[in-house]
Length: 103
Image 1 (cartoon, rainbow, N blue to C red):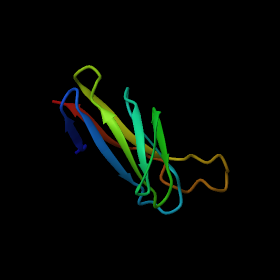
Image 2 (cartoon, rainbow, N blue to C red):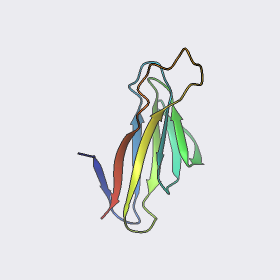
Image 3 (cartoon, rainbow, N blue to C red):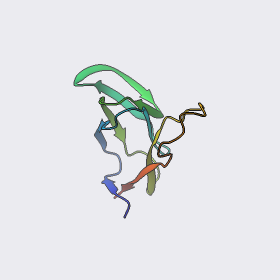
Image 4 (tube, one colour):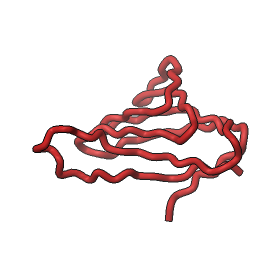
């Protein structure tokens, strides 16, 4: 079944992403939410607010997520960077999803 991350409305949570893939960048987003990137590979960075993140192989990324939308459920999704090179098409093109759920 789909993983559900339950958060309290109004709270800000730290989300630590770890890219365990070998050869591709991944895009990550949470529907209708902004992410504030505060750390890369174990080092603090000047906060960057964005709607999506691209994470490279072996990279870690710390971001803050605030549960400030209408009460409900929101998809979190990651997808591999899609190449347009015709000879480089034998990879899994599926999305990985989970649900952010307000409680």
